[in-house]
Length: 172
Image (cartoon, rainbow, N blue to C red; front, side):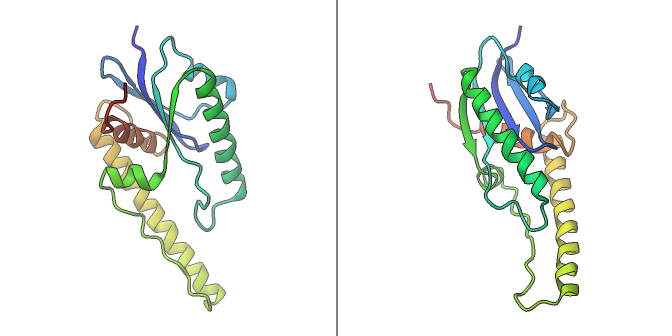
């Protein structure tokens, strides 16, 4: 039986988990819907190191409070569950894993302080387009790095966090 050596987690409701097993095989799954389903994914005979995306203080303008609440709830639950199941936990910021892979930045725009409501809406529309392009770029890069996996918008970040983890020095 293969045992996960590395686990990478994008804790958002539309995030996912990516596993690298001791034999080097990689697989990924969208974030399970319930805490029980999450625990089922994390329970293994021999846990390894889990890299989880950090809880970021500012997720960006226009992010619904409900999205941030689910992200924070999942993050706390996952860190606690990982520790209870004896995984070694490494928290990594989006900026760190994206920079380590040479992915660049999202390039979001900000409305000027004196902007009209219409100007703020225009900036918000541009930022939505930039976000879609950024997510497509991440998905494409994940698929390129892991052609054996089905990189989706839900699993792409987890796969890229896994690639970041694979590039880290091994701590024994």
